[in-house]
Image: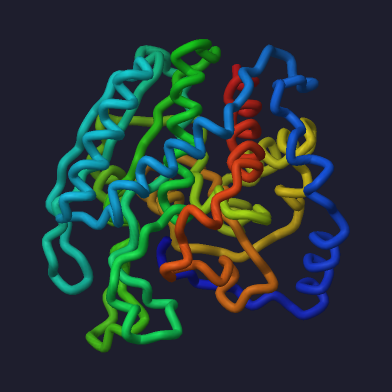
Length: 336
């Protein structure tokens, strides 16, 4: 997960968000939507959280997926093969990207297209690399070791793999593109003492934005999944998404409430983040909504495990994967 530019929220607003979150219990809703018994206009497939959980675990079993490592190469092959297995037309987009410290990153974006000839398209995306540093660790001796990134990276990919499996079994009325962006999390660490450089995060989405896998690529809108598997997660409405993709934010959050996952998706503003959706919008003019965990009670806003070695499978909750995955399915299968 990239470095955040957190907005300062007034105290009264923070208190309102806090009490709104505390006033909703997830316990009564963790199983809602598992049979896809929704009030939508079409039959929506049931998201299988156990499958998504296994996809998250398999990625983590490779180890930290830092560009240039064997774990990164092996996991990339796994993702390509799974998407092909799930019936997608798969594009691989290798690129040599320059990191903040001039390291050359051997990166590759992985793109899976469903119904590629349909001009009515929706983009789903996540990043599949993991951070090379644990720069939020309090123990400085651990800060320069790579993190596993179970939540920050692998969770979004795990949800998208399960969605891909559903797309193969039942096609929606529109075309879907799944993009797994690389080199998202290689941004400037907190311990870096060199000159500041802009745009060091989200290198894969910046590359794709300038050189899409299909000439003149466009989509109605996009949905970015980032940190969508943590236990007790809440997905406030990210502020850049509100400004640039407001009607799609409304569509997604209303879908979540309609199918019983409202406690995961408070209809409240969160913070503003530097994430892949920023470059999808700026470089391709595609409004893109960032579904991202926001914890107003943590120091970072993203949980105590963010950018630490605690970001492992111990914090992944199938109930959270279910809430996000079923909500995304609800949205895309009702898109005409």
